Image (cartoon, rainbow, N blue to C red; front, side, top):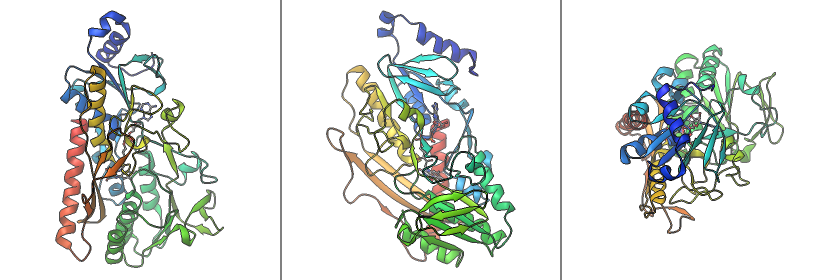
Length: 425
Ligand SMILES: Cc1cc2nc3c(=O)[nH]c(=O)nc-3n(C[C@H](O)[C@H](O)[C@H](O)COP(=O)(O)OP(=O)(O)OC[C@H]3O[C@@H](n4cnc5c(N)ncnc54)[C@H](O)[C@@H]3O)c2cc1C
């Protein structure tokens, strides 16, 4: 056994394996959750609160979770790594068995999960929320080694990528150019790259005001675009150049040694710091388990989040294809509750509750300057599609509204505190 399991967790996991079949039928439902991020930690936490009779095991390789949300504020100098790092002790205190290991394979027929440490976990229902993988090589020259020089800072893991990018910004001389490559849809957190541009500009405007940001985008439009661009013009005049795909913004190649970002039509942009947010897919585990289709994402039933390719496996968070819903921590959290409810109901032969999904994405554009977008979604009767509820949702108003921006920045902070508390206790 190579896992770092506390003795109690080992006994619980061992007990699950040892239970003979006739006993298991009467025993507590075994819910295994893979991935202790926004989807998985939310699911494990909610399952224990809503269904105290369900035995919940969470599999996660990292000892602590570093959030992507508010990682951009770390780049802006407004947060330290400790403020966005969360322990799993609160989940343990809620009765979740936290297994610190990596899931290496899923057997959907035997209903087991094989762990890298050698253990096998049996489940009645599986919730899978492993997040995303970067598609190495989708941008020529951009592989895992390149990310040590040109960080993506888009998959948090232990926070090393975000800290690396921050150190590079600190080391850059005043007057330098920060190049940011932004991927095509779909990708994790549609407003995330633009909040990142804002927070880097926030830092540069205070410490290196002659510097520039060159944002090379594969797309022609982006989330909350008017609001972001109003903020950039007001707070960071002349600092940010955003180049859309139809003006040769799509980065197709990198030269790591020369620190060059090369676009579709061969323009070579030499920069001082390069942040390459590469194209993405569902995390490797979901793909290796045969759950993804040829888009690289996992099709699911929109009422139960059960994978189309495998009964009993509910895939939530960024790894699935969520129709028009954004790949956000908020959506991962809200849909985790429906996935838990559906998993328990289906296990017990009961009807699946009627779902509604909410999303609010806050972004910080500057200090005391927040903006947001809100959406409400509902799936159709058989879970084959999700649509936005007509006339629901909206975005922050445009215009010179300092009180509104200050209030939204505070709401964003409150959102972060409450969602992380609900996930981690
Ligand atoms: C810069 C940035 C800013 C963002 N800001 C916001 C925001 O303000 N609001 C918002 O709502 N969203 C935001 N997001 C998006 C949000 O981070 C994601 O949508 C959310 O994390 C998705 O949750 P998830 O559970 O799918 O993946 P994650 O939260 O990434 O969790 C996946 C977990 O699975 C684990 N894992 C992977 N493979 C395995 C395996 N084989 N075995 C076991 N465990 C495994 C990983 O270690 C990880 O802990 C932001 C994203 C970025 C990059």
